[in-house]
Image (cartoon, rainbow, N blue to C red):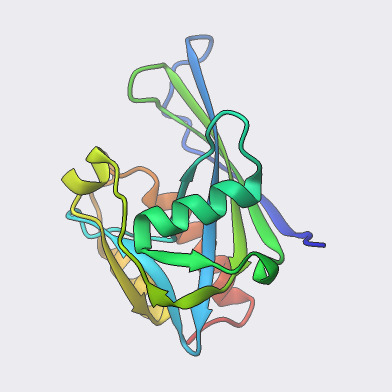
Length: 171
């Protein structure tokens, strides 16, 4: 049975109060092999843990398995899924005035074989690529990105990565 290691809130306070609200739940995988983490990166220089939004009727585990495979080509081993971080995020929405999202970051392992990815159109447009990298390098690359306008989620990723680093996963 997994448990929450830490629950955090990221509120950018850049939205219109009292306006329209878009809510979403997302699940992401923290996959570590030796001293490297499985990440995806895009054309803006941002590095993220693989994952994405829950579909109607999906459970957290189903979303984790589907999203990690779609974005990276790796299949999550269901029995390996353990503890998680939970991030409550509030920021300016793309269409609505406020975007609220809860993101579950589960620790898990993946099979050795990498299968074909199934990227969504926007992920293709962002030129998402897969990499295995040391956590310190990923944090350094994300912190070097200064223009957050097109990729506001980078702040959430940096927060989670720093938390992992503080817990001793600092290779």
